[in-house]
Length: 159
Image (cartoon, rainbow, N blue to C red; front, side):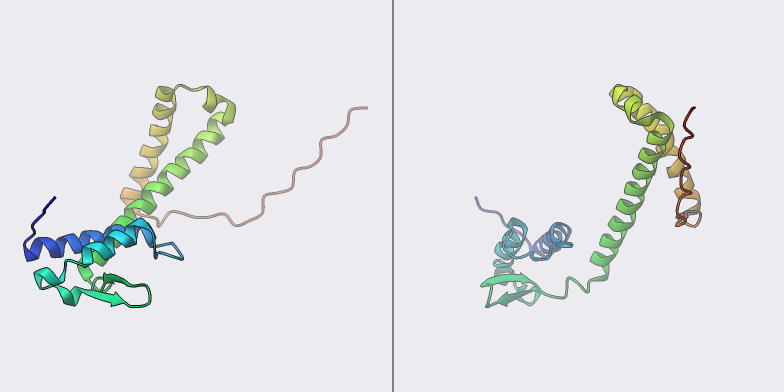
């Protein structure tokens, strides 16, 4: 297979590779040697052919190419990452809160007995409530109760 790129297209491909590798390895202690790092190194090998060698660096110890720090400092890429993080955070928060409320309202047994249609209908009302709240107010009304719950009194024994 032969694929041809303009210089601009290849630079956009390097950005896409950077973002994909970042997503896959952002929280990995050892990002070297996985399939995403390996494909990044492979793609970087073609940068010189298009006059973009300043965008890649060679790690002699690992014997691999990687993208230069220019990508980490790129405002456009950092803005994309930040937008993704913000949206992923809110989406995850909304569904976690909805799940908590579902469990509180219905209990585990009733939820397990629901059809998929019933579950998604009920969950949807909770999700919509939180979506509207966060769209209107962001997280300014979000609070975490750090107080320990009151200890339950033991039930009295019947005589």
